[in-house]
Image 1 (cartoon, rainbow, N blue to C red):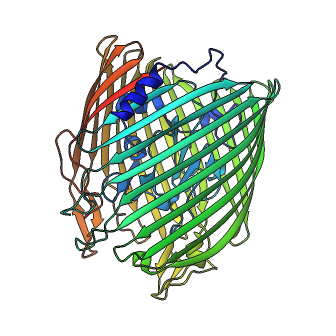
Image 2: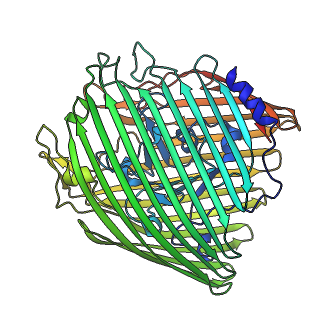
Image 3: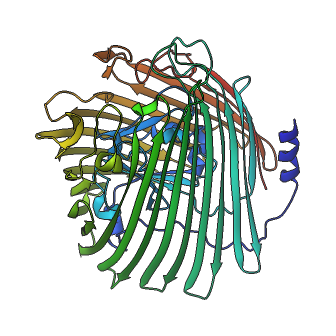
Length: 606
């Protein structure tokens, strides 16, 4: 009741000024005006998150073609993301375009299970090698969390009817030339055990917040800063039913960004300083503790020029320093220890040219010098032909990428004799894509995309160390999507077929050959709106949780439905049901997922 009273007090408090500045999201790194048209991305705005009732980042990413989140239990548990059949550590994660992967993890992968949606104003997804834009580690693609300034004051409270509560709010204020934006939220969820067949529920509690500051110094120059903090505390389980009670994970992450933006009619220049820190702690019933910490410092400068309507170019430089330590005093990760660091300096440039008004070419190049792995370069070539027929556009790209070894793979060790290998080479990839966009009308589009890629020099554990193994991992697939947006309706249908084989030619685990889904949001009138989500996850191969043998996993069909009503002015109520059919399923094997969950949400914008 206390939280609902706070919500209503916020709803009647007018602290926003009518003089709201223009707020915009910075473009993709290493791009310029013309070649932005050839950058392939999927954008998930906060409006779609709200309409489709997505509850966390995994929810939103599940409805992007060729993106496969795998969560080891309910909300708050460890989550890996596979992009176009590549490995879980081949997706680079960014915060407003700056890398934030966690180097204290064994292979430098990012845990998507820790992120909820109260901090974000949007999510960008880039599929395919993106190293020429973002640098190392984007072999499969990149996911960019956007925390841009939100000028709309709002607050929501959600009761999951016996399974938890969620609260979030956003405040915007103008003071003496400064734009100030504060938002955050809390989540408390308790639906099921992490282990299939477990006898106790594994709850999660998350608290997160963002503070944005912006000041227009003069007509061309502005200052910006963003601070983000989140803390996720969850009960977790081991790999057997006798490892349940007393196991916990405490995951903290902090990030700070400072920047200057200088813009004229024909030029854009950005300087960004970024740092982030991970502090993870795992405990078992005997009070034994494992501590994982990593810190990164990054500086990036970019400059782009629009020469004329046909030609644009850009250049930039970036320097990043990573350091990670962890010590294990318990059972997790076999008493691993790590103390290591490295630094990477990158130089990059791009060129965009309109050969004709309907034919655009793009070129992106980046070279990185790492003090451990040496020089590595990345290239992306793109071509866009508009109006092959009056409504049909064709896009094609060729990309290369690479992934540096993680700090544990270089410097780590455990009490079973595993040692890091300082002689490891980066993994390298190349990929091609051909896409057709059919613009049915101004409100709807049908897209077909075909891609093929390969990865060499894969890093694997072998004979108590990590080595670059011979052979080539291969990925190929077909993606289809249909999108229609009107003032009253939003409809998206998608499907993909994927082949993903490791270097030996065997199918990759946890990557189904077929998946598809749908999102629908429809306004019945000015007050009532209904929505529905459907996701089909096809049969696939997994590894048995106990025997560690390969096992065939069944397909799943998941439905979410809901209805909302505008009560008065800017106050709305939303009723939703997730996993409507209460389907029981494990993904990965041995780890349970939440059944049917009912929620009631009260929201207000002001």
